[in-house]
Image 1 (cartoon, rainbow, N blue to C red):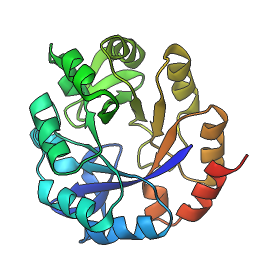
Image 2 (cartoon, rainbow, N blue to C red):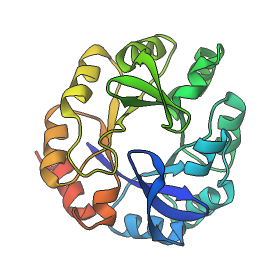
Image 3 (cartoon, one colour):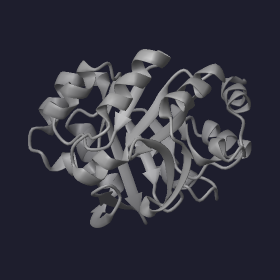
Amino acid sequence: MEIIPAIDIKGGKCVRLTQGNFEKQNLYSDDPVKIAKRWKDEGATRLHIVDLDGARMGTPQNRDIVRDIIRRVGLPVQLGGGIRSGEFADRMLAIGVDRVIFGTAALADPLIGEVFARLGDRAILGLDAIGGMVAVQGWQQATQVPALQLALQMQEKGARRIIFTDISRDGMMEGPNVAATQALMRALNIPVIASGGVSKLEDLAALKDIAVEGVIVGKSLYENAIRLPDAIALAASK
């Protein structure tokens, strides 16, 4: 199980939102590159970067910062936020991004299957849910589409990997939605990365027990509730 530290960028700064609410944010650093270097020094093997401005505007907005992180830190980066077409995915891959995350708004594109086929493992479906229903527009709008239904449809269209986020848990440090994550995994035959709500090592142990491929960890690292080296050690233990 891979532990993937999150770096959320808004206005060029490293922040964390609560339940995806842009009005409820904590500022952690004016220098996202410095934060990325910290996670590398503490043992991270990959970074999860979200361009929050991009998620809100519909196109990536913090390209230069992402490129600086890639060049100066040297870790593989998976990037989400505003990537809603193959064109923008290609632009981000061209600056060195390892994996691009297609948010749920992109999935209305009738050509998304072709994009998944062309990019293969370099494309990830970012599946965000509220109460089991898909959320779109940077988490700002819930739909009436069941998350599991969409996941199955996208797997059929060629998605190779899913990041599942229960928005109600994100930034709350109340524990991940293990049951919903496990239900999704049982229905699919592609890897799932869990995101949202991790607050202690026991949460990571519970996700490891259901064999998720990875866990994205954010606020608990920034609030020092979990030390990254401890999380990595737990993930690597037998």
